[in-house]
Image 1 (cartoon, one colour):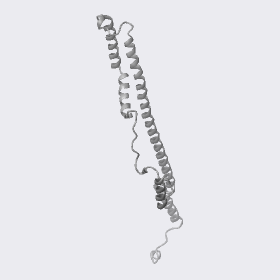
Image 2 (tube, helix red, strand yellow):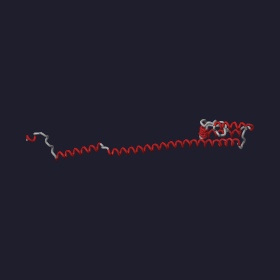
Image 3 (spheres, one colour):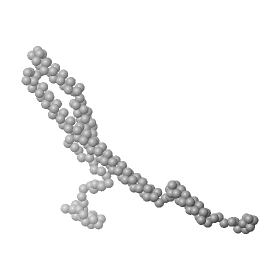
Length: 193
């Protein structure tokens, strides 16, 4: 009881009315990792491993080796001496081994397919973004070319300038015929005749 009154007096003296709590956690520091019950693994490493297995299961070499193992298994358990046979005629152990192999192969193949789908999705997204950029660039260039064409429509071209100059020369020649050239000022040529 005396401890509580001392604690209350300390909190009042410090100006705090809150009840003191345990040690404060700092918000600027990451939390300490919690102990985990399950072992940790690297999903990428496991995914790469599953892809290697799935690639091997999809080869002719796997089928050949699997066929040879099954043939040797059956031949050994039929023709070997009775005390050396480990799986008699119904071949229950062989069935169990093949079932176990199939039960692991199917999820590994599915995992490899999911990883391939993820890669394909990322590639498609990148292709889509690249196509969008190409379309935007093409539209920009199209607008720029159209603006240049419109600007060139207002600029005098070489052919237009030639035609204007030819028109002016023709007009000047027509004026010369209508209005003959005058004698230069102060010339006495007309007086001599």
